[in-house]
Length: 519
Figure 1: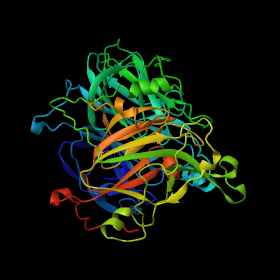
Figure 2 (figure 1 turned 90 degrees about the horizontal axis):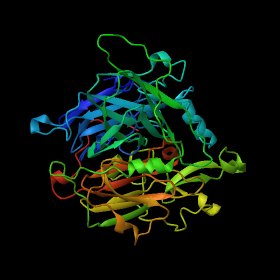
Figure 3 (figure 1 turned 135 degrees about the vertical axis):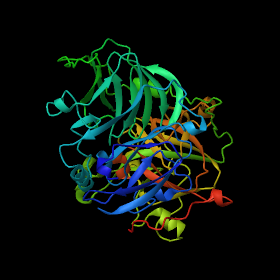
Figure 4 (figure 1 turned 90 degrees about the vertical axis):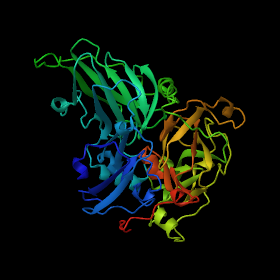
């Protein structure tokens, strides 16, 4: 399959093999976002974490092993910012051979809806420029729905994505936020949506007039076509909680058009636009995400870890590094950076998985801290400026096989507090709690949801707030954790876990394939 021509992948089994040709001038890696790859980190994808980049024009086969994923996931490049244009849907259908099906009436059709961003400049130039200057990157020139900015742009008007539907049917929309930089609000004029899944897992259904979707996240919604036959706008625009940070304030649109017999209809000059919350409406954002709940029933049971063996607290911060003679274009001549637990991650020149498997020393350290090395008022309005500069390092956190892990992700207000969509490779996790302010380890766990928390692989840590996640470390290997705002990841808001092998062959990493790309 040529990646540039690949729109989506449909899976219904448990194991697939892909042969990919990277048809570009750049070296790439590919990741199936949310596919847990049990015991098989060799095919996970992030560069210098589980493999070295696939060289331009090179053929590289990856085995994709599914576990309990069902619903919508996606794939994307995992090198620099190439995922801005190299991405697509992964759809995992119920396994009808095992008698399973949707936990809702089968929809008339299912349709991937992919949100992304578009720059007038080459995205490689955008990436290289902000790496060179130390400043914030140029904001995108437009958002897109299935590759098109929409009717509000003369250049895109004739190519606006159109979803043609029959009246009186139910459609499953598979929403994917492939945007590089922004959380988005989305809605369809005059239509309610019913949320039924997120991140490859089903949820208790609930109706909503809009959705909030973070970069890296997927949300499955049912659309009932119960309105008078006409044309209606679908629209998306940014949710941005950071103060003083530029963002793309444009709106992308697509058309929902009803079939009217055999007649061809022309869209009205001004179809109704949906209501979307204001760009900084934090209440609207958390009101939506706070409604997500797992099904937690007999057909879709959950296993929330209760007795925790490894309690971790990770701060997530935007920082700066000083530049000689204040020569960079970040704040006060500095270079922008980011960190987790005050460590700004540096990618090694050899991938960590290879180094771990082959006992190669000097590639990474194993001292990623279990809690913040500096304790302060993380969400103070004006934190001390001396805290702005983190350490650099390539540190991992080693955990025992089958240990039960809780991570509290604590946002800070260093430099610029904002939401951080944090993604963990190799696992889905239960979001057992979240809140604003500093996490209180005595009081806040009393309010955890251990009954039906949503099962996700990406969670937006609220601005100046926290989120608590739990998972069982039963997937041995090297697994990446990072912010899915790509500028933050590039600046160093990332780390890796090493989950050790367990006892017996089924609790150990698979051996490496016969060929891995060289560094």
